[in-house]
Amino acid sequence: MNRVMSIMAVWLLAACAPQYLPAGDAGTDPYWDRDELVMRDGKRLPVSVWQAEGTPDAVLIALHSFGDFRLAFEDIGPALALRGYTVVAFDQRGFGDTSPQGRWSGRETMTGDLRDAVQIIRGRFGDLPVYVMGESMGGGVALAAAGSGMLPDVDGLILAAPAVREDVTFRYCYNAFLWTAAHILPEVTVHNDRGNALHTDQAYRRLSSDPRIVRDVRIDTYWGLIRLTDMASDLAPQVRLPVLLMHGGQDRVVARKSIRALAGHLGDLAAIKYWDEAPHELLHWRNQDAVLERIADWLGQQR
Image (cartoon, rainbow, N blue to C red):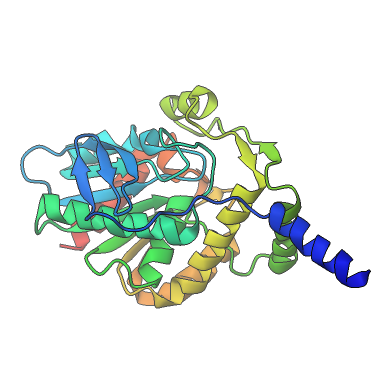
């Protein structure tokens, strides 16, 4: 009887396991097709571009935060283009105009998609410097990919409150709770309102009302995000690229001590900027000029 009960328990857990949608088998070289980036498994990811006039000084691949999508950069993208930098932003799987919305693809798939995007953009823009600019989850993807050695053709990282968790109190107890929830109730959702009075008006409207924002978050998707964040934290010591690391004192998502730990791992590779009054979504902050100036100054120093 005990053996039967054990088998049934394992079967029930397997039946309720997180339902992720990882990349399929590679069937093509990654390529750019009009307004989409096509990954090596054929998955199409919508892309937006803010093009600098003439020959740009560099190309920035922009990775959005959790629940957001490529138009997260509709404020800062044009502003950076005016400063001579072309910005390319794409919807990561499960977000924006990709389908199915709100479903997690897995950290290996997300870092692999970034690798493919770099390959595509390198092919399109030739020898121009290429940087990855990631906000929150996007920063975590950039860190995990760089720490895994997947970004040899990238010149540096711009990280705005990247998703890291080192030194978080009760981190692994929280992980155990989430693992259990994700394996028992993977489809249960939790509502998450996104608008913040510290955001620009345009960002506030998008985060509050755009139907492409993921506001009802599946438990298994959130568990996937936590695993990505752990991966970014664990691989940070392996990053060998110049990094601009930015964080704000009003961040209620990424702990200051986790950013300090990340800075410690990066050492002399990192230039660090902290604004006491800035929110988690730094690239959406009302005082965007301060962020733009810091990014432009750092990029200028990399030449």
